[in-house]
Length: 301
Image (cartoon, rainbow, N blue to C red; front, top):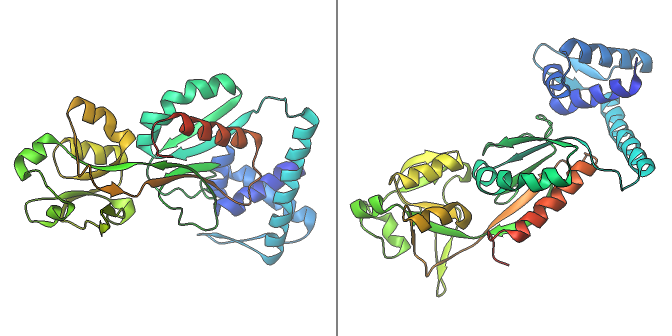
């Protein structure tokens, strides 16, 4: 038995919550993962996991062993990095998940620079607006707009995205141009709701007056690209970061509303699990994304 390989398999089962999911993220068979954990238990002469047909639970001894093993694996990687030296190019697989509009407009176009700097990092990029389970899905980090609700994650605020209210000319021709945010409460207007936010969380302020819009919505969408497309199709009023709207405002496909009202900016965070050793590929990616955001005209400083 390769004890280090068995330890890594055990850690992945604990984090993923199942042998099947652990096998998928380790790119090995479920049988291999099962055998490695069984061999580890036999060598230690303790039961690490309780298995049922539906789920895997960590025993008390297994929980204590897990905490020690993740520190040991982190120390081993740290030792290897120190021996090789910081001058060694970062390498290996890095799993990152980002919002789909941010991937399309900002991140992917900038990746040639990242690849030129770090050619030995293999990047697995998830571009979605779903709420990713970083531990279960074995994701190294996520980029997310808004506040990070999971207090168990380590979150670093890397930008403040400016927001605006927008609508297509076709919508305004049909519904009329609202003069104030309160006009959106009238029966003649409708908004497009972004489902992950549970409504519209961003207050608008002007001359000491602060309002939140809770107008009638015709459509609720959970994907940022589809949300933008719905606005371009004239289905209603939408709230967007400026970077998503800029091109469409320039082309005349969208018009910005209430330009004399201020909206609190949307924080953009990079977040990762606290019990993960921050490997060199993750460290350089975080530093690179911070640098990228400083170069982009996406935020007010």
